[in-house]
Length: 507
Image 1 (tube, rainbow, N blue to C red):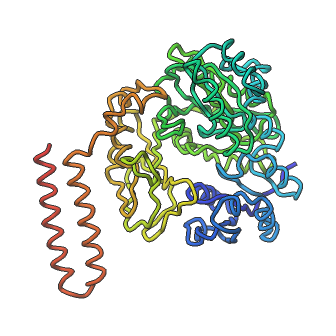
Image 2 (image 1 turned 135 degrees about the horizontal axis):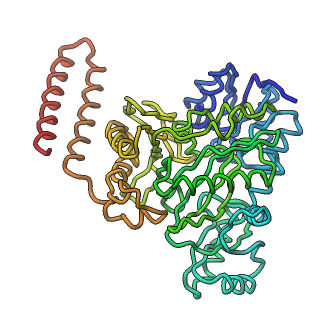
Image 3 (image 1 turned 45 degrees about the vertical axis):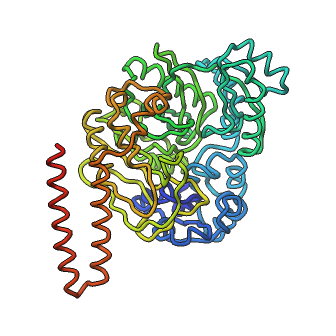
């Protein structure tokens, strides 16, 4: 039975809220934004057809407030709720509340979220369905005695992980026996504070692993397909920084095997919606199930770019009860796509968040460039949420061309007022190991000296040019009808000539 969705409440903020709303607008669906006090002037609030306040800045008083969001959905007569990613996107209770209120949750059922959200249950489910899983425990480590026994059986090194976790929280690598108990305490404490659940389990540590995920789509009629892989091994503290597709590691044979395992994993839980099956792959192409994300991933745009399919539209179609229009034989990858996550953070100060007022922004443009962002000049990035500003997505015919294009786009991306990770991402594109596609999850730590090297003289000069351009812009605003604006323009032209001469000399 199908039900046409005409009005969607997007229970999120920032770039993902905007991204969902864009697809809704294309297919004639009205959108409802929700916002906290500090997000009153946010771009997603301006873009939506309707907008409602849901509370104070702290997430637990706004974007994690299930009852308030359900109340707004009912007042605004929303047919459905799209949770985006993060916040309530993998919250089984939220999915159940939507179900109870007769509101379509654009995602899987609460039972599926519960099964795959608990990492121990997910591991057991995958083992029973025949999907390769990293060796480790099938149950929570109940006490220290059990932990010591299990880790001895599995063998060091191991990873201690939060059962209810994700995003690198509640995770510790142990390679020495004397560190087991302290790591166990730390993992449990972080898991408790992050997820309200201190359950942890153990997995064998895979050295030099590649983190590769497969995008899957499943409908309510038993049809499941995959849309190929994404390489997510450029990570810092288990948080993804750069993603690309196709993976440099992948072969056609490995893609077929892993894709089939991903489909089998989804079918094992009767999955419907968009989701991701994540694997660890060693250098011998042995792969192991890591976890399933029962939501849209941050990095989904690169899959859209190489396959041509809009994943949000597919989510809506599935939520309406319609069968998938895409068949596995229709899916192929064309060209190469890379995503860089742009953060408001100080990379020279241990990547500390850098909230504040954006005084100037110039986004990159041109062939093959997509920017999923939400900030604008005059917008103040709040301290209360993830500091990601945007996602810069590049497409090109080949991987080498995609890297060149990303480097060019990062050069064009100018933001003043807050510190950003743009220069750090430029260094990643320049790194020989990345260019050659010879990297794993240890890429950043293995190339730290190269990636954290001081900016070159050329880079510093270009920064000065941006500052000069902004000052000139401000001067023109103040003197729009005066002679000073002409002299300022002349001064800027001279600065531009000097900049061009400097670049020519450097080259």
